[in-house]
Image (cartoon, rainbow, N blue to C red):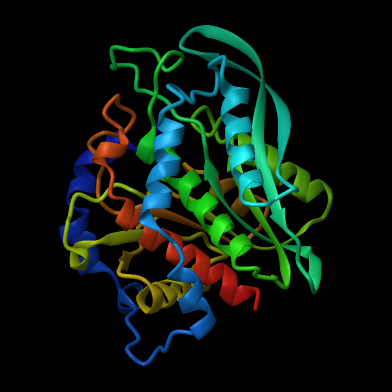
Length: 325
């Protein structure tokens, strides 16, 4: 998640579990005990594994840094692309764009690389269902190291990439044939200003693409609570996706162990915001548990909860499959 403003509200975030959950409206605390799982969706979500998610987070953390201005930025994108290809996606590719920015009083002229992969729709191939999250990471300026040299970024945001890849793995290996084309995307340079998703949404708009919805996963693996009864996910919406958010909360209670809240404080600070600006319906999933390792050298796999991330992946998967049956 882009660094702007998140730590400014750290004190507020510490109160979320005790304040926002209590203060949510009834619509925000949807629990429908009559909802019965769809057998096909339930079967697919059972194939999502915490160990697989953890392995991907570890692989990305092991690259040393994924900072958007580091020399290995293309290597990072290629590694993600190759992961998609290892699942059988011949469509996986890099989508490059030029980015010239100042960072900490130094000017950089760079090429950046989104990763895009598709599972073609069998009925409406020109209609797109999009899921993704950014693959770059950063350290705050108070850290002793430079993000050019090291930035592990396990929660922020190897976790969102891992969730995206895990859903891609399950759908491909299960032989799922979606009605619309599913687009899996990981974005570059989110931490510098949401540039990767801006590039993608500009292209979508220029080509008059039909986007059914977009699901954004950013910081979805941190949860220090061992007991799943205390696992909370923040489902962030936009003015054009309020009903979709309420539906997602129902789906969450049906197929996952998560409880949900809705606090939109940070909805402008992750990639889903660019989709909203182009009038595409989008949701932003983020753990409700404030991560003390945010933008630090301690944002490591050892401090994450892959079982929590698995439940987030189940929610994403259920929404995508439901929309494409």
